[in-house]
Image (cartoon, rainbow, N blue to C red; front, side):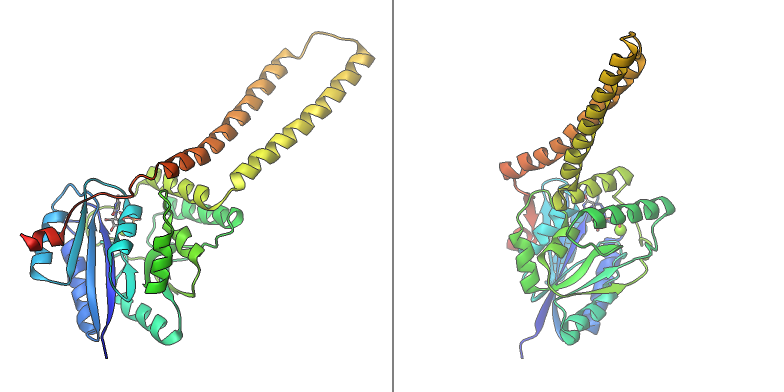
Length: 316
Ligand code: UDP
Ligand code: MG
């Protein structure tokens, strides 16, 4: 019988320290799962360190190793998409290059799909173990908000680490959007997913590429991509303000008819004007965010640009 093939996508950005360790770990797993063919596709996301050199060397000595090197840093989302578009396996895994997604979990994931009839096995850390206190707090708040305002269900603490059947991968590739929020996309395409709890280990080497600001922007991206609630909210707030204004008009007319027309109250008027214009500008900004995503989608820019792959190197 023909051996099945698992492709492993590893997005890498400045991972020279952890890459060799992850490669070793992957090799250990592939030895233990000798009944499977493996393909490793590393995505060098415009790294400025020796990541690409390491990948060239690995690809030379190991035919299972493939790599795609981007012309600049396009972000992890583009890396994952490029990986999904270019792998050839019957099953596809996405895994970080820092051992926080431990390769040895692949065995459990594979058996969940193979024997329990799932289409996908994914890892989550619902207690956000491994995150620092501030990240834990904001991640929890974000998942709560997302859960309330989006119809796309999001498992708390979901990681990108997952093993999927080819049919699921093909559906994800069909979702061509430029502003990608993969956790939402994985959930949107459906399919039976088994969630496996685990405690996220610390990075084996190097540092996190996601600071607070980057995560915040990513969170906003997710909300804009999978919820229109902020737009509905702006309409509701607008309506509430109209009702308040209507009540205030009646109150002022009645007061003037009873007590005459003393010229006072301008400080409160200034406060009201500033407050209302603030609310207006805020919601204009919210609408602007949706329009800007629309603008980027319409331009249909490529999600990534390749500067080199292992094929260039092997043809030399
Ligand atoms: N990564 C990437 N492009 C980027 C930032 C990160 O390909 O612009 C990769 C990174 O090399 C790692 C994965 O995405 O394999 C997750 O990044 P990181 O470990 O820094 O994030 P964290 O685990 O702290 O959320
Ligand atoms: Mg990490």
